Structure formats: structure tokens, C-alpha cells
Amino acid sequence: MRAEFPDFRLGTVLATSFTGTLTERRGEPVERIPTPQRLVDWLAVNGLAVDSCTTAQLERARELRESIHAAATATAIQDALPASAVQVINDCSAQGRAAAILTPEGNRQWRLSSASCVEDALGVIAADAISIIAGERDGKLALCASPTCRAAFFDTSQSRTRKWCDMNTCGNRQKKARFNANQRKNPRSAE
Ligand SMILES: [Zn+2]
Image (tube, rainbow, N blue to C red; front, side, top):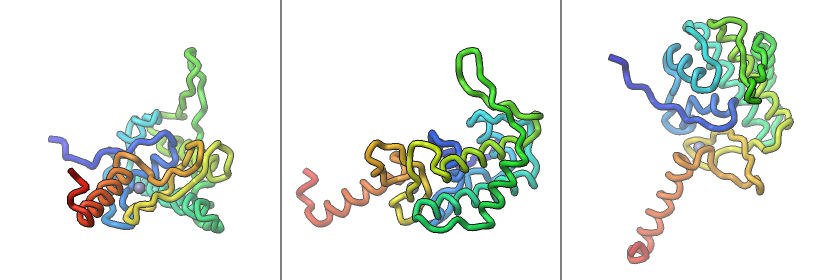
């Protein structure tokens, strides 16, 4: 029987979807890639399918994840980039040997140098992080307004005023909390 694992929070930006594999960092953290197999599953969902993953590769992936989180957070609050995080991101980017492939339908796919090369997949993620941290893409890094989350996310809204990393989770919870608080203040307003 397959154990139940926390589901993935998938976004449209690869690097911040990856940092979103650890949620509620300021509350009770939820690890969404607790085993090497779950990292394999996450990579497959994100177009970076690999055959297998070792414990050491999972550890490296988590190191990259936390480095991206630290660098993205620093960027969001306009702080200096932590040197150790920059080092890890750059090392992962340099080690990856994935190639961008154009499909006949005109889509981009990633081709890894071998089917077991988690390092190639991490290289793609690191390069994605570099492009958003360096401001190469249309959007702005911001921190989730939820006090138990504070995830760095990439705001591509026209007004750049998005408040939550994810509307369906943090956004909804915040709305509900506000609704309940209003109801307590004025119980009849709910009718
Ligand atoms: Zn959030």
C-alpha cells in the first residue's frame, strides 16, 4: 500500500512552485517532498521526469530549495542576497546539463542528459530561480501576507498587488478568518 503524502501546491513559476514544496514555514511546516520518490513525482508533474532519486539527491534538492527561498525572500524585501544561498543556486545551475528542446507543436521541453540525472532537473530549477531573482522576467517577487506562511511568490498581476502565494489556500484562509472576525463583531451581518 502506498502511504499518503501531502499533495503538491502547483504554481505557474517553476522556482516558486519548488519552494512551495515546504509550506507554512512560519507556522507548522508541511514537507511535501518527504521522500526521494515524492521528489521524483514532483519533477514528473513539472516536466522534469527522472527515473529515480537517492537520499543524497533529495538532500541536495532541499538545499537548493531553501537557498532559492532565502534569495527570493531577500529580493522581495530588497535585502542583500545571502552569499551561501547564491553559491548553492549557482553550483546547481552550473552542474545541470539539461537542454531546452522545441517540440513540433512549438512548446519547450527539457531534455535531461540521462534519465537518472536529478542534478539536471535541479539545474533547470536553479536557472529559473536566477531569472526571477535577477528581474529578467515580467513580474515581482513578494512575500505571502499570511503570517504562518510568508512564502516568496512571483507576482505577475497587472497592478503587482497580489497578497497571497496561493488564492486557494492562504488567500482563502485569510478571507475566512476575516469573515469570522466580522461575524463576531456583528453577528447579524451574516444573515
Ligand atoms: Zn502563503
